[in-house]
Image: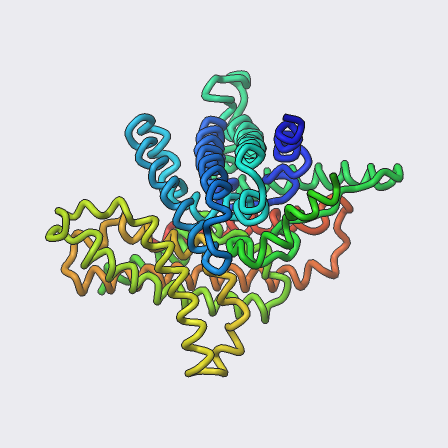
Length: 238
Length: 204
Protein backbone atom coordinates (compact mmCIF):
# COMPACT_ATOMS: atom_id res chain seq x y z
CA UNK A 1 0.00 0.00 0.00
CA UNK A 2 2.98 2.23 0.67
CA UNK A 3 3.63 2.62 -3.03
CA UNK A 4 0.06 3.79 -3.56
CA UNK A 5 0.24 6.57 -0.96
CA UNK A 6 3.59 7.55 -2.46
CA UNK A 7 1.86 7.94 -5.87
CA UNK A 8 -0.81 10.15 -4.30
CA UNK A 9 1.81 12.37 -2.66
CA UNK A 10 3.76 12.44 -5.91
CA UNK A 11 0.75 13.66 -7.91
CA UNK A 12 -0.53 16.16 -5.39
CA UNK A 13 2.74 17.75 -4.29
CA UNK A 14 6.02 16.54 -5.75
CA UNK A 15 4.99 16.51 -9.40
CA UNK A 16 1.84 18.59 -9.26
CA UNK A 17 0.82 18.82 -12.93
CA UNK A 18 -0.26 22.45 -12.78
CA UNK A 19 2.37 24.13 -10.61
CA UNK A 20 5.42 21.91 -10.97
CA UNK A 21 5.19 20.21 -14.35
CA UNK A 22 3.18 23.03 -15.99
CA UNK A 23 1.20 20.56 -18.07
CA UNK A 24 -2.29 20.89 -19.48
CA UNK A 25 -2.05 24.65 -19.72
CA UNK A 26 -4.96 25.03 -22.16
CA UNK A 27 -7.75 23.93 -19.80
CA UNK A 28 -5.91 25.49 -16.87
CA UNK A 29 -6.19 28.92 -18.42
CA UNK A 30 -9.48 28.51 -20.23
CA UNK A 31 -11.97 27.10 -17.76
CA UNK A 32 -10.84 28.65 -14.49
CA UNK A 33 -13.17 31.62 -14.70
CA UNK A 34 -14.80 30.39 -11.51
CA UNK A 35 -13.85 27.95 -8.78
CA UNK A 36 -16.69 25.55 -9.57
CA UNK A 37 -15.62 25.30 -13.23
CA UNK A 38 -12.10 24.49 -12.06
CA UNK A 39 -13.41 21.70 -9.83
CA UNK A 40 -15.61 20.34 -12.62
CA UNK A 41 -12.82 20.29 -15.20
CA UNK A 42 -10.35 18.85 -12.69
CA UNK A 43 -12.68 16.04 -11.65
CA UNK A 44 -13.66 15.08 -15.18
CA UNK A 45 -9.98 14.94 -16.14
CA UNK A 46 -9.34 12.86 -13.02
CA UNK A 47 -12.00 10.33 -14.01
CA UNK A 48 -10.58 9.99 -17.51
CA UNK A 49 -7.06 9.72 -16.11
CA UNK A 50 -7.96 6.99 -13.62
CA UNK A 51 -9.89 4.93 -16.14
CA UNK A 52 -7.33 5.24 -18.93
CA UNK A 53 -4.42 4.52 -16.56
CA UNK A 54 -6.24 1.43 -15.35
CA UNK A 55 -7.05 0.09 -18.80
CA UNK A 56 -3.64 0.89 -20.28
CA UNK A 57 -1.92 -0.75 -17.35
CA UNK A 58 -4.08 -3.85 -17.80
CA UNK A 59 -3.28 -3.97 -21.52
CA UNK A 60 0.38 -3.03 -21.21
CA UNK A 61 1.63 -6.51 -22.12
CA UNK A 62 -0.83 -6.91 -25.00
CA UNK A 63 -0.39 -3.63 -26.88
CA UNK A 64 2.59 -3.90 -29.25
CA UNK A 65 5.19 -1.23 -28.67
CA UNK A 66 5.06 0.12 -32.21
CA UNK A 67 1.36 1.04 -32.13
CA UNK A 68 1.11 2.05 -28.50
CA UNK A 69 0.49 5.77 -29.17
CA UNK A 70 -2.57 5.28 -31.42
CA UNK A 71 -3.85 2.63 -29.00
CA UNK A 72 -3.51 5.01 -26.04
CA UNK A 73 -5.23 7.78 -27.99
CA UNK A 74 -8.19 5.53 -28.82
CA UNK A 75 -8.54 4.44 -25.19
CA UNK A 76 -8.36 8.00 -23.88
CA UNK A 77 -10.73 9.31 -26.56
CA UNK A 78 -13.29 6.62 -25.70
CA UNK A 79 -13.29 7.52 -22.02
CA UNK A 80 -13.49 11.21 -22.86
CA UNK A 81 -16.55 10.55 -25.01
CA UNK A 82 -18.17 8.59 -22.17
CA UNK A 83 -17.46 11.38 -19.68
CA UNK A 84 -18.74 13.95 -22.15
CA UNK A 85 -22.10 12.22 -22.51
CA UNK A 86 -22.44 11.59 -18.78
CA UNK A 87 -21.82 15.28 -18.10
CA UNK A 88 -24.26 16.34 -20.78
CA UNK A 89 -26.90 14.13 -19.18
CA UNK A 90 -26.36 14.76 -15.48
CA UNK A 91 -24.70 18.18 -15.08
CA UNK A 92 -25.87 20.12 -18.16
CA UNK A 93 -25.01 23.55 -16.71
CA UNK A 94 -21.40 22.55 -16.07
CA UNK A 95 -21.32 20.89 -19.49
CA UNK A 96 -22.37 24.18 -21.10
CA UNK A 97 -19.83 26.28 -19.28
CA UNK A 98 -16.92 23.90 -20.02
CA UNK A 99 -18.06 23.44 -23.63
CA UNK A 100 -15.33 22.63 -26.12
CA UNK A 101 -12.78 21.87 -23.42
CA UNK A 102 -14.38 18.56 -22.45
CA UNK A 103 -13.63 16.79 -25.77
CA UNK A 104 -10.23 18.49 -25.70
CA UNK A 105 -9.33 16.44 -22.61
CA UNK A 106 -8.12 13.93 -25.24
CA UNK A 107 -5.16 16.10 -26.09
CA UNK A 108 -4.41 17.03 -22.50
CA UNK A 109 -0.76 16.08 -22.21
CA UNK A 110 -1.14 14.97 -18.59
CA UNK A 111 -3.20 11.97 -19.65
CA UNK A 112 -1.06 10.71 -22.52
CA UNK A 113 2.02 11.61 -20.52
CA UNK A 114 0.99 9.45 -17.57
CA UNK A 115 -0.06 6.64 -19.90
CA UNK A 116 3.31 6.68 -21.63
CA UNK A 117 5.55 7.24 -18.64
CA UNK A 118 3.77 5.37 -15.86
CA UNK A 119 0.74 3.24 -16.66
CA UNK A 120 2.38 1.41 -19.57
CA UNK A 121 5.20 0.24 -17.33
CA UNK A 122 3.57 -0.44 -13.97
CA UNK A 123 0.97 -2.78 -12.44
CA UNK A 124 -2.70 -1.88 -12.24
CA UNK A 125 -3.11 -0.73 -8.64
CA UNK A 126 -0.22 1.76 -8.52
CA UNK A 127 -1.36 3.06 -11.93
CA UNK A 128 -4.86 3.73 -10.58
CA UNK A 129 -3.40 5.58 -7.60
CA UNK A 130 -1.07 7.45 -9.93
CA UNK A 131 -4.17 8.55 -11.85
CA UNK A 132 -5.94 9.60 -8.64
CA UNK A 133 -2.92 11.52 -7.41
CA UNK A 134 -2.20 13.31 -10.68
CA UNK A 135 -5.89 14.03 -11.22
CA UNK A 136 -6.38 15.46 -7.76
CA UNK A 137 -3.19 17.49 -8.15
CA UNK A 138 -4.62 18.93 -11.36
CA UNK A 139 -7.98 19.57 -9.65
CA UNK A 140 -6.29 21.39 -6.77
CA UNK A 141 -4.31 23.52 -9.22
CA UNK A 142 -7.37 24.46 -11.28
CA UNK A 143 -9.45 25.17 -8.18
CA UNK A 144 -6.75 27.38 -6.70
CA UNK A 145 -6.52 29.45 -9.89
CA UNK A 146 -10.32 29.51 -10.15
CA UNK A 147 -10.70 30.79 -6.59
CA UNK A 148 -8.20 33.60 -7.13
CA UNK A 149 -9.85 34.66 -10.40
CA UNK A 150 -13.40 34.48 -9.06
CA UNK A 151 -12.45 36.33 -5.88
CA UNK A 152 -10.79 39.24 -7.68
CA UNK A 153 -12.98 39.21 -10.76
CA UNK A 154 -16.41 38.78 -9.18
CA UNK A 155 -15.90 39.12 -5.43
CA UNK A 156 -17.22 35.61 -4.88
CA UNK A 157 -15.90 32.14 -4.08
CA UNK A 158 -17.97 29.17 -5.25
CA UNK A 159 -20.69 31.68 -6.09
CA UNK A 160 -20.91 32.87 -2.47
CA UNK A 161 -20.24 36.54 -1.93
CA UNK A 162 -17.20 37.06 0.29
CA UNK A 163 -16.11 40.58 -0.56
CA UNK A 164 -18.02 43.52 0.97
CA UNK A 165 -20.67 45.18 -1.19
CA UNK A 166 -18.45 48.20 -1.71
CA UNK A 167 -15.86 46.03 -3.50
CA UNK A 168 -15.70 46.89 -7.18
CA UNK A 169 -14.90 43.63 -9.05
CA UNK A 170 -11.99 43.78 -11.50
CA UNK A 171 -13.81 42.09 -14.37
CA UNK A 172 -10.60 41.70 -16.36
CA UNK A 173 -9.65 38.80 -14.09
CA UNK A 174 -12.48 36.59 -15.28
CA UNK A 175 -11.76 37.55 -18.91
CA UNK A 176 -8.93 36.07 -20.96
CA UNK A 177 -6.03 38.31 -19.83
CA UNK A 178 -6.74 37.62 -16.15
CA UNK A 179 -5.91 33.95 -16.67
CA UNK A 180 -2.41 34.83 -17.84
CA UNK A 181 -1.86 37.32 -15.02
CA UNK A 182 -3.01 34.98 -12.24
CA UNK A 183 -0.91 32.09 -13.56
CA UNK A 184 2.09 34.44 -13.94
CA UNK A 185 1.64 35.54 -10.34
CA UNK A 186 1.40 31.98 -9.05
CA UNK A 187 4.48 30.82 -10.99
CA UNK A 188 6.41 33.87 -9.83
CA UNK A 189 5.45 33.08 -6.24
CA UNK A 190 6.67 29.54 -6.73
CA UNK A 191 9.95 30.82 -8.23
CA UNK A 192 10.41 33.06 -5.22
CA UNK A 193 10.00 30.14 -2.83
CA UNK A 194 12.47 28.12 -4.90
CA UNK A 195 14.99 30.96 -4.98
CA UNK A 196 14.74 31.37 -1.21
CA UNK A 197 15.30 27.67 -0.78
CA UNK A 198 18.33 27.82 -3.07
CA UNK A 199 19.78 30.69 -1.06
CA UNK A 200 19.43 28.70 2.13
CA UNK A 201 21.35 25.93 0.42
CA UNK A 202 18.51 23.45 0.23
CA UNK A 203 18.08 21.12 -2.69
CA UNK A 204 15.81 22.69 -5.31
CA UNK A 205 13.62 20.49 -7.46
CA UNK A 206 14.47 20.86 -11.14
CA UNK A 207 12.22 23.00 -13.28
CA UNK A 208 10.39 20.92 -15.82
CA UNK A 209 7.45 21.40 -18.11
CA UNK A 210 6.43 22.88 -21.40
CA UNK A 211 6.97 26.43 -20.19
CA UNK A 212 10.66 25.70 -20.21
CA UNK A 213 11.13 24.96 -23.87
CA UNK A 214 9.41 21.62 -24.33
CA UNK A 215 7.69 22.52 -27.52
CA UNK A 216 5.93 19.29 -27.87
CA UNK A 217 3.57 19.49 -24.93
CA UNK A 218 0.83 17.96 -26.99
CA UNK A 219 3.04 15.31 -28.44
CA UNK A 220 3.45 12.75 -25.74
CA UNK A 221 5.65 10.45 -27.76
CA UNK A 222 8.52 12.85 -28.01
CA UNK A 223 7.68 14.80 -24.88
CA UNK A 224 6.83 12.65 -21.93
CA UNK A 225 10.23 11.09 -21.57
CA UNK A 226 11.83 14.48 -21.19
CA UNK A 227 9.21 16.10 -19.02
CA UNK A 228 8.41 13.34 -16.63
CA UNK A 229 10.81 11.34 -14.62
CA UNK A 230 9.97 8.04 -16.27
CA UNK A 231 9.24 4.72 -14.65
CA UNK A 232 12.85 3.62 -14.75
CA UNK A 233 13.98 6.69 -12.89
CA UNK A 234 11.29 6.11 -10.27
CA UNK A 235 12.66 2.62 -9.81
CA UNK A 236 16.17 3.98 -9.37
CA UNK A 237 15.04 6.44 -6.72
CA UNK A 238 13.48 3.67 -4.74
CA UNK B 1 -18.52 36.07 -49.47
CA UNK B 2 -19.22 38.65 -46.80
CA UNK B 3 -20.05 35.92 -44.33
CA UNK B 4 -16.80 34.10 -45.05
CA UNK B 5 -14.85 37.32 -44.50
CA UNK B 6 -16.61 37.88 -41.18
CA UNK B 7 -15.81 34.32 -40.07
CA UNK B 8 -12.18 34.76 -41.13
CA UNK B 9 -11.67 38.04 -39.28
CA UNK B 10 -13.58 36.70 -36.30
CA UNK B 11 -11.43 33.60 -35.88
CA UNK B 12 -8.12 35.24 -36.73
CA UNK B 13 -8.34 38.31 -34.52
CA UNK B 14 -11.50 38.74 -32.45
CA UNK B 15 -11.57 35.22 -31.01
CA UNK B 16 -7.85 34.66 -31.34
CA UNK B 17 -7.13 31.00 -30.83
CA UNK B 18 -4.31 31.52 -28.34
CA UNK B 19 -5.15 34.75 -26.59
CA UNK B 20 -8.86 34.36 -26.10
CA UNK B 21 -9.62 30.66 -26.53
CA UNK B 22 -6.43 29.31 -24.94
CA UNK B 23 -5.82 26.60 -27.49
CA UNK B 24 -2.25 25.75 -28.39
CA UNK B 25 -0.79 27.44 -25.32
CA UNK B 26 2.06 24.95 -25.02
CA UNK B 27 3.74 25.66 -28.39
CA UNK B 28 2.91 29.34 -27.83
CA UNK B 29 4.99 29.37 -24.65
CA UNK B 30 7.51 26.74 -25.72
CA UNK B 31 8.55 27.65 -29.28
CA UNK B 32 8.39 31.43 -29.03
CA UNK B 33 12.03 32.06 -28.08
CA UNK B 34 12.99 33.53 -31.45
CA UNK B 35 11.07 34.82 -34.45
CA UNK B 36 12.47 32.36 -36.96
CA UNK B 37 11.42 29.17 -35.18
CA UNK B 38 8.13 30.79 -34.16
CA UNK B 39 7.37 31.54 -37.80
CA UNK B 40 8.29 27.95 -38.74
CA UNK B 41 5.95 26.57 -36.11
CA UNK B 42 3.21 28.97 -37.14
CA UNK B 43 3.62 28.00 -40.79
CA UNK B 44 3.41 24.30 -39.96
CA UNK B 45 0.27 24.93 -37.91
CA UNK B 46 -1.38 26.87 -40.76
CA UNK B 47 -0.55 24.05 -43.14
CA UNK B 48 -1.82 21.24 -40.92
CA UNK B 49 -4.96 22.97 -39.63
CA UNK B 50 -6.09 23.93 -43.13
CA UNK B 51 -5.72 20.38 -44.41
CA UNK B 52 -7.14 18.87 -41.21
CA UNK B 53 -10.25 21.04 -41.27
CA UNK B 54 -10.88 20.02 -44.88
CA UNK B 55 -10.43 16.30 -44.20
CA UNK B 56 -12.42 16.26 -40.93
CA UNK B 57 -15.10 18.29 -42.70
CA UNK B 58 -15.34 15.69 -45.45
CA UNK B 59 -15.54 12.87 -42.94
CA UNK B 60 -18.20 14.61 -40.88
CA UNK B 61 -20.28 15.69 -43.82
CA UNK B 62 -20.29 12.39 -45.66
CA UNK B 63 -19.92 9.75 -42.93
CA UNK B 64 -20.38 10.77 -39.30
CA UNK B 65 -23.07 13.39 -39.72
CA UNK B 66 -24.67 11.87 -42.80
CA UNK B 67 -28.39 11.34 -42.12
CA UNK B 68 -28.42 8.35 -44.48
CA UNK B 69 -25.94 6.39 -42.36
CA UNK B 70 -27.47 5.37 -39.01
CA UNK B 71 -29.65 8.48 -39.12
CA UNK B 72 -26.66 10.78 -38.55
CA UNK B 73 -26.22 9.39 -35.06
CA UNK B 74 -22.60 8.43 -35.62
CA UNK B 75 -21.57 11.92 -34.62
CA UNK B 76 -20.87 10.69 -31.09
CA UNK B 77 -17.68 9.26 -32.62
CA UNK B 78 -16.47 12.76 -33.56
CA UNK B 79 -13.75 13.08 -30.95
CA UNK B 80 -12.27 9.62 -31.48
CA UNK B 81 -12.34 9.75 -35.27
CA UNK B 82 -11.04 13.30 -35.55
CA UNK B 83 -8.06 12.77 -33.28
CA UNK B 84 -7.03 9.61 -35.13
CA UNK B 85 -7.49 11.25 -38.50
CA UNK B 86 -5.43 14.24 -37.41
CA UNK B 87 -2.63 12.05 -36.04
CA UNK B 88 -2.56 9.97 -39.22
CA UNK B 89 -2.80 13.05 -41.41
CA UNK B 90 0.21 14.70 -39.80
CA UNK B 91 2.28 11.56 -40.37
CA UNK B 92 1.11 11.42 -43.96
CA UNK B 93 1.79 15.10 -44.61
CA UNK B 94 5.25 14.66 -43.18
CA UNK B 95 6.04 11.71 -45.46
CA UNK B 96 4.56 13.47 -48.48
CA UNK B 97 6.53 16.68 -47.91
CA UNK B 98 9.75 14.74 -47.38
CA UNK B 99 9.33 13.06 -50.74
CA UNK B 100 7.69 15.74 -52.87
CA UNK B 101 8.76 19.09 -51.46
CA UNK B 102 12.08 18.72 -49.63
CA UNK B 103 12.59 22.48 -49.29
CA UNK B 104 9.26 22.98 -47.53
CA UNK B 105 9.97 19.88 -45.46
CA UNK B 106 13.26 21.35 -44.31
CA UNK B 107 11.50 24.53 -43.23
CA UNK B 108 8.54 22.92 -41.46
CA UNK B 109 9.67 19.35 -40.91
CA UNK B 110 10.87 19.51 -37.34
CA UNK B 111 7.64 21.15 -36.19
CA UNK B 112 5.25 18.75 -37.88
CA UNK B 113 5.41 15.88 -35.38
CA UNK B 114 5.02 18.40 -32.58
CA UNK B 115 1.56 19.43 -33.71
CA UNK B 116 0.07 15.96 -33.92
CA UNK B 117 -2.02 16.62 -30.89
CA UNK B 118 -1.76 20.39 -30.61
CA UNK B 119 -5.17 21.10 -29.16
CA UNK B 120 -5.83 23.89 -31.67
CA UNK B 121 -6.10 21.34 -34.50
CA UNK B 122 -8.72 19.19 -32.77
CA UNK B 123 -10.31 22.35 -31.40
CA UNK B 124 -10.91 23.77 -34.89
CA UNK B 125 -12.32 20.46 -36.17
CA UNK B 126 -14.77 20.33 -33.27
CA UNK B 127 -15.79 24.01 -33.43
CA UNK B 128 -16.52 23.62 -37.12
CA UNK B 129 -19.03 20.92 -36.23
CA UNK B 130 -20.40 22.77 -33.18
CA UNK B 131 -20.94 25.98 -35.12
CA UNK B 132 -23.04 23.99 -37.54
CA UNK B 133 -21.03 24.93 -40.63
CA UNK B 134 -21.69 21.51 -42.11
CA UNK B 135 -25.37 21.31 -41.13
CA UNK B 136 -26.86 24.58 -42.28
CA UNK B 137 -25.26 25.00 -45.65
CA UNK B 138 -24.92 22.98 -48.82
CA UNK B 139 -21.98 20.57 -48.85
CA UNK B 140 -19.59 22.76 -50.87
CA UNK B 141 -20.23 25.97 -48.96
CA UNK B 142 -20.15 24.17 -45.61
CA UNK B 143 -16.76 22.64 -46.36
CA UNK B 144 -15.42 25.94 -47.66
CA UNK B 145 -16.60 27.73 -44.51
CA UNK B 146 -14.91 25.08 -42.37
CA UNK B 147 -11.64 25.41 -44.26
CA UNK B 148 -11.77 29.22 -44.13
CA UNK B 149 -12.43 29.07 -40.40
CA UNK B 150 -9.52 26.65 -39.93
CA UNK B 151 -7.14 28.69 -42.04
CA UNK B 152 -8.07 31.95 -40.28
CA UNK B 153 -7.73 30.36 -36.84
CA UNK B 154 -4.27 29.13 -37.78
CA UNK B 155 -3.32 32.56 -39.11
CA UNK B 156 -4.39 33.95 -35.74
CA UNK B 157 -2.00 31.48 -34.12
CA UNK B 158 0.80 32.47 -36.51
CA UNK B 159 0.29 36.17 -35.81
CA UNK B 160 0.25 35.79 -32.05
CA UNK B 161 3.23 33.41 -31.83
CA UNK B 162 5.38 35.62 -34.10
CA UNK B 163 4.42 38.75 -32.12
CA UNK B 164 5.22 36.93 -28.91
CA UNK B 165 8.61 35.79 -30.24
CA UNK B 166 9.44 39.33 -31.31
CA UNK B 167 8.64 40.64 -27.85
CA UNK B 168 10.56 37.84 -26.16
CA UNK B 169 13.68 38.57 -28.17
CA UNK B 170 13.63 42.10 -26.73
CA UNK B 171 12.75 40.93 -23.22
CA UNK B 172 16.05 39.02 -23.15
CA UNK B 173 17.91 42.31 -22.70
CA UNK B 174 15.70 43.61 -19.90
CA UNK B 175 16.40 43.51 -16.23
CA UNK B 176 13.54 41.47 -14.82
CA UNK B 177 13.08 40.84 -11.13
CA UNK B 178 14.34 37.43 -10.14
CA UNK B 179 11.01 35.71 -9.44
CA UNK B 180 9.49 36.85 -12.71
CA UNK B 181 12.26 35.53 -14.96
CA UNK B 182 11.32 32.77 -17.39
CA UNK B 183 7.70 31.66 -17.65
CA UNK B 184 6.02 34.36 -15.48
CA UNK B 185 7.16 37.31 -17.59
CA UNK B 186 6.06 35.47 -20.74
CA UNK B 187 2.63 34.93 -19.21
CA UNK B 188 2.37 38.60 -18.22
CA UNK B 189 3.31 39.54 -21.79
CA UNK B 190 0.64 37.17 -23.11
CA UNK B 191 -1.91 38.79 -20.77
CA UNK B 192 -1.07 42.26 -22.09
CA UNK B 193 -1.32 40.97 -25.66
CA UNK B 194 -4.74 39.51 -24.81
CA UNK B 195 -5.87 42.94 -23.61
CA UNK B 196 -4.58 44.46 -26.86
CA UNK B 197 -6.52 41.87 -28.87
CA UNK B 198 -9.70 42.93 -27.06
CA UNK B 199 -9.41 46.03 -29.22
CA UNK B 200 -10.39 43.91 -32.24
CA UNK B 201 -13.75 43.02 -30.73
CA UNK B 202 -15.25 46.13 -32.28
CA UNK B 203 -14.45 44.83 -35.76
CA UNK B 204 -17.52 42.63 -36.14
